[in-house]
Image (tube, rainbow, N blue to C red; front, top):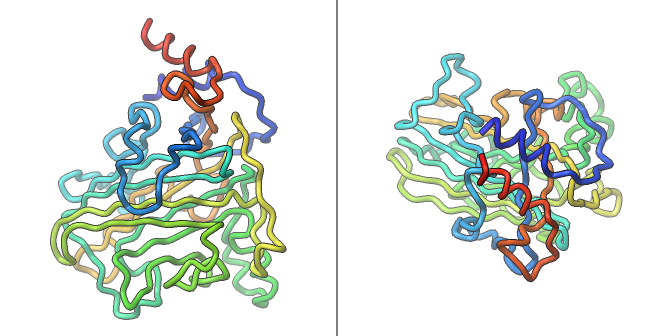
Length: 308
């Protein structure tokens, strides 16, 4: 997989105006599949829309080592207890980033006493720094500032979504740091033109089961607590580099999480965009979708791997 990603980076020669910042893992570049406009996935928790995406190139998972447990200090990757995989994608026409995640968990936990609280049940967290600007999204020093000042700092240059499903009393989708904002009430997504989320769960709390998550994200350059009129959006292009990350908390029978399974495998990815993964936006695969605008990049990539 390391060879594959390095080779893709060398072969896909496209212009990019993004400035390179620190990222994790150092020296690695990941890739976002581009859905053709007529095949963007519906955010409904049915992951079959993602079957067209070549998993050997685009999937990050516990099995290939890119998702790891990061808080116990013992590797903690017991796939019989917990297993996870994820794919990131995008589409130029919609100017949106898409992500899916699939989890198999030996013990489902969805029983927090206060349904308005986040970070107290099994979850999946999606993190995006769309303009690749890097830097702090959360800093402990900011908590001492007046609210009107810290709202100008917390998660304005990168966004974090935390999903708890199934909903309890309707509460399921949260953002940090205050849990809700103009994009979510915790129960509803008032601006679906900016974010859509789908999910599914099999099994019952206290037993084994699965989670499926999907999210369609607006690539904010700067997000403002006062609303979309004060916020700015990145114009995504082929060859652009974005920062992405994810975390999933696994609660079993205790009140605190037993593990956090993170990509990249650095737990503070949620607070510092310099710890996110670099991800390059690919063109539509012209061979798979011949009616789309095709570049020869994909053909060169495939030919290269067939001759190895």
